[in-house]
Figure 1 (tube, rainbow, N blue to C red):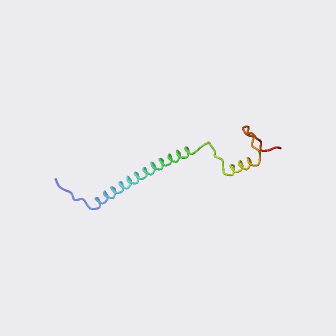
Figure 2 (figure 1 turned 135 degrees about the vertical axis):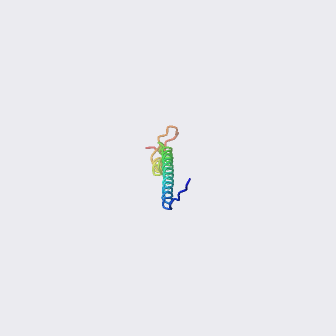
Figure 3 (figure 1 turned 60 degrees about the vertical axis):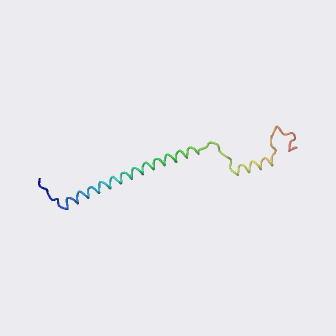
Amino acid sequence: MPRYQLRGSKRRNAAILFVCVVLLTLFLVIGLCFVLFADAQATSSRFYREAHNNLDEYPSPEMLFGWGLGSLIYPNDDEFRRRPTSRA
């Protein structure tokens, strides 16, 4: 069986093709990892947002100050008190 000597250009063409295929595969894997990671982060942030979406609204400091000041100025209609604070 005779052996044929391959010229350098044919070997180089095959090597360049191999390098291109390997780089395309590498970029494909990196792209898929990015997409999967971004989807996982989006799901995680959506769960975090929904977990902290409380319907109970706590009063702001201004509302608390207004309530406290109003209860000091105006009489409180508490039926369990023995003596009224206002005699008007």
